[in-house]
Length: 110
Image 1 (cartoon, one colour):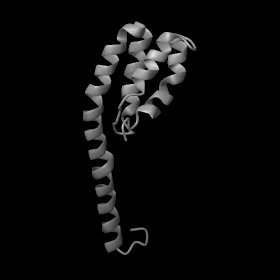
Image 2: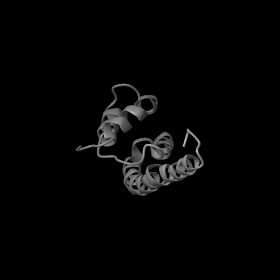
Image 3: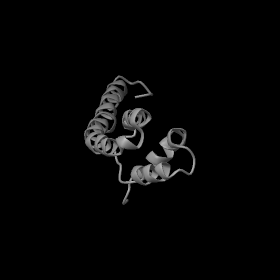
Image 4: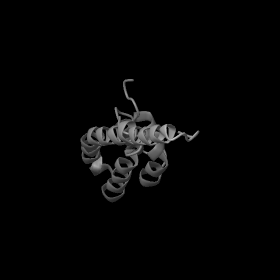
């Protein structure tokens, strides 16, 4: 649990990092260490963070390292909260209410 989704995040962006920094370059290795750090957010919103990260690295390269770390840390908490609230609580509650209403009406799918 030390890095949560950090290794998955790195695996997701590794092909793009190789295009940006080149294979086996010192810059690639440094950014791999950076992206393997702790990361934990909603699976439904992590692509937004990934897209911002890749765009910053494509534009600025290794100079964006601290900015990328800040964006990841700054966005993972709010996106986790919103994602968990919507997909973990709100949607199941809505569908549960619809199913309960269908069941009380005698619908076998309720």
